Amino acid sequence: MNQLLKLKLFVMGLMSTLESLKVKQTSDEILIRHYKQSLDMVIGHLKKPLPEPESGRHHVNELDRLRRQMRLKDLLDMINKLEELKLHAKSSQEILNRLDDIKESLGYLEAELQNSIPDVIIWLLSNGKRYAYYRLPANEVFYSPNVDRRGRLCGKVQTITLKWPGKETDIAKDKRNFLPGEIRVKIWLGLAIHEQNWLSQQKGADLAIYAETHENQTNVLGQWTTTKPLMSRPAWSDVTGSISLPKKDFQLPPGWGWEEFAYSFYLFYVSIRYSDDTGHRKFTEEIYEHQYRLMAGAQWQPKATSWTDLAGDKVSSKDERNEPPLGWEWEDEWTIDANRAVDEEVFEYCVNQTLGGWCPTEKIFHLNRRRRWYRTRVVKGDKVSEQKKKKKDGQDDLKNEGWEYAPMFNMKFHADERNMDMTRCRRCHRKMVPSAEQTHMTSTGGFVANTDIVFRMESQVPSITDSSVKTDQQFDSSPPTTTTKKVKIELNAPRMFLSFKSKNFKIIKI
Image 1 (cartoon, rainbow, N blue to C red):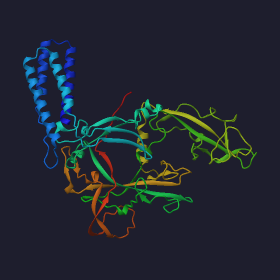
Image 2 (image 1 turned 30 degrees about the vertical axis):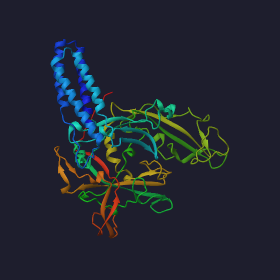
Image 3 (image 1 turned 45 degrees about the horizontal axis):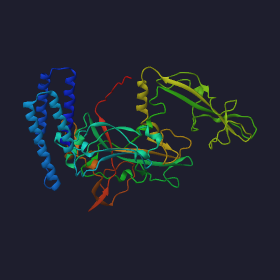
Image 4 (image 1 turned 180 degrees about the vertical axis):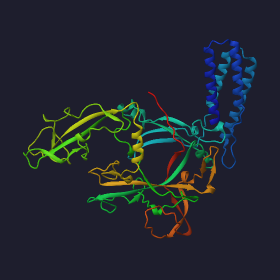
């Protein structure tokens, strides 16, 4: 099917090229000579043999045999007609018409009536709900050792525009004019015997595979602990918190081991590194000035924590923030925001700051009030300072020892600890490497390992009967006591990265 599809696309591209020759007002005699040369190329592609069914793997039925006979007969007819056209063509338009007929015939022949491979479906999920999808025919990304029979998008980067799920008539009117999302992906679909090709495609980079677990803690009376009742997930778990994954209990698949001299390390999620101003050339800083009174009707006075952000966490006062961040410069001065629901003193009021409920009118029972200050800063120069980038890359990995904080485990995590945060977690990695027997060198100089850990999420491992209790908090590579009984387990998908050997920079000018 892919061979005929590629042949049809080749004919379409050839017709487009020949049409462009007409635009240049070339003489008909020269056009016919170019067109006849193109016919030789098409005939050469038509003569390539179609794939034969493999005994033991393909179970051919009567429809398959008849369909193959029809394809061979039609391809032979196309070759004979093109051979005859080369000898008796009188005009360039006659050749174009014949190529157009061949294109239509190939479109009919390429259709597979008994396609048994399901399409590749990409879903955009959030909180278990499906928001968008894209359906990609499997043959377009299917791998074959024969280049002519390989999917045209196999192993190639492509841009995919997602679609809203459901019928078009059922999609809300406010969604129809918007795209749910766009992604750039490289998809490879193939048989297990060809899986080494997937790894060998990574040029200039090595595939690094890491075991991953997450350490979880809760805050009880100001102390971080792993005890209940607030602890709703295991102390060591997967990213969802539903599976217990202690570091000392990790078992490596056959043929794999821990990288020598490489111990576990903590790592932020990529999105955690970025601050609110990331990607902006202009940003507005905001802080809140707080005052309180001890009893109704008393005088207002500054609080012990007079300056906070919107979430109520303590920040530096406006007088202490005269210097802009590295790579930025101030565009104006600190200004009180009067363009909001406030009174004549530009304050808003509430009974308890932690409960919220701010209103613009002062009541006798109000004990807290605040007002908003803002100041705008812009990027200094034509690009973000390299010093800022180096500072972020060098310090964020060590910040807070890799901990990420949130009020609860099912809420969004952030890098900086706040007053309302009652939970924290950090992810722990350790690199896995294959044994020497499981690797071979590629043509690009890199090493390709067996991909069992990537493609097969089930494994046969010895059952554990006795193991010593480990006191350290590192991945334990010593083998536990085992029996010969085999137990089938499901493996957790490992964390995979592309490790580039050299940095690549691209400058985009807008």
